[in-house]
Image 1 (tube, helix red, strand yellow):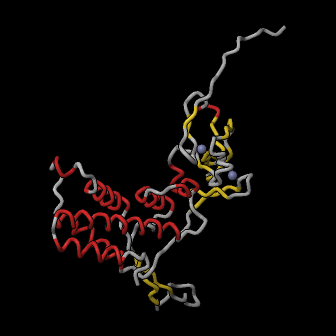
Image 2 (image 1 turned 180 degrees about the horizontal axis):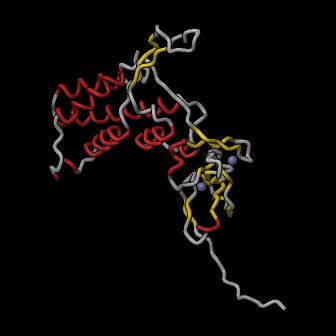
Image 3 (image 1 turned 45 degrees about the vertical axis):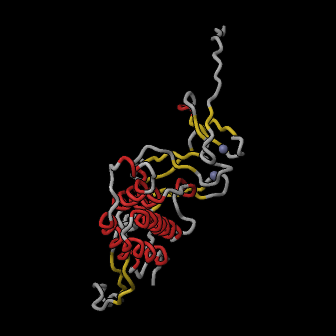
Length: 256
Ligand SMILES: [Zn+2]
Ligand SMILES: [Zn+2]
C-alpha cells in the first residue's frame, strides 16, 4: 500500500546498504533522509488546513513531527483502528471490523534518526573519524521505516483551540501547545497577528489578541511586536530579516 510513498527511496537505500561501501552508505543516508521527510510532510498534509499557524511555515521534518505530536497525541503512536455498531442498550459493540493500522515513529526517535543521518552527510566526518558509518548503524531505522511503510491507515485527530482572526483566517493551536509561553501566530503572512493563550476562570482555553506594534517588513509581511518586547530586536516570521526599533527618549514635562 505504501501510503507515505517512501518505497522508491527505501528500496534504493536498502540496496545501497547491501553494497556496504563507504560511499554507497552515504547515498543510503540521503535516501533515508528523504523517507523521513516524506513521512513528516505526508502526516502534516493529513490535517488539511487545520494545522497550528506556526507549522504552516515549518519545513524541518523533526519540528513538524514534534509539533504534530503536541497537537495530536496519536500522530506519533502506532495503533489499530476498528469500528463497531453499539448494541441497542448502549453497551460496547460485540463485533468489530478492522479499518487499518497506523505505524509511526515517535518524535524522539524521529529526531534521533534524522539528526544521525544528517551528521553522516557532512564531509568533515570522514577525517575526524568521530562517527564511523557502518551498515548496522542504519539497520534499526530501516526496520522502523519498513514498519511505517506497512501502515494501512494515516490517522489525524484534531485537538485544537482556535480563534477567528480579523483578517478572516482561523488561527489553530494544539491543545498541548497551550503549555508553552510562545504566542500563537496567525498563518496569514500579510497579517501575522499574535494571540496569547489564556485559561479563563471557567477553565476554558482561549486565544486572545495581543496588543502589538506592527512593522511591515521589506518582504511585505507584517511583523507584530508585543509592546513588552519592543526593546529587543525582532525577526520577520516570513523571511527572517531582523530589525530593531530606534527609540527616542523624550524628557518628561510637568503639566500644571
Ligand atoms: Zn490574521
Ligand atoms: Zn520579511
